[in-house]
Length: 111
Length: 111
Image (spheres, rainbow over the protein chains, first blue to last red):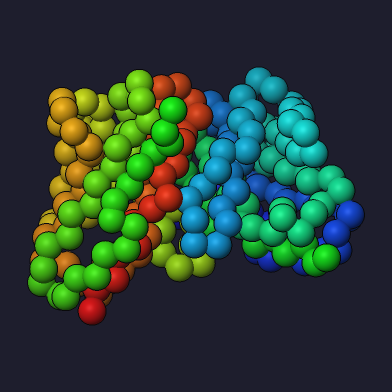
């Protein structure tokens, strides 16, 4: 079964609004990463948050991590049409190099 | 510094043929990962390799699939006797530490 599960599966908002996506996972992790995938393209790394961190910012992105609830959220502020993409969380567990991906949230930002 | 290169970008094979997918990691990266993505799904880990070594192949199907990362040249994912269920996008990623850099993927269609 998937380690990471994103919620919601799909999200449609207007330009300028904020978008929040959530990710839950099952086991202890070393770090959690968020990726973006434009339709038919490869993945682009957005941000990595380590298990001992609670919040991280990068430009318009804000990621939080709650290890007690085994969940993370990705907030995109002041969204743009160019943010339209699928967003995936991926977890890396201790002793393993493999990233385990969720099924993703499909974000549509309407101009 | 060129990113991760994959070729071909699109590959069509008839059932029973062999598919060879190539991945050239970023310069200086010695870790390569292969992932498979079915439509509307997240990425599923297949195999993790370092130069001349398979480190973790826990996501590889037991039969027909093999991977290598020779001392010289690209990493190769080889699928023998392809079946329709092998149709998917195959992504490779390279890294030196935590962050994975993904290639654009190879879209395999089995007819």
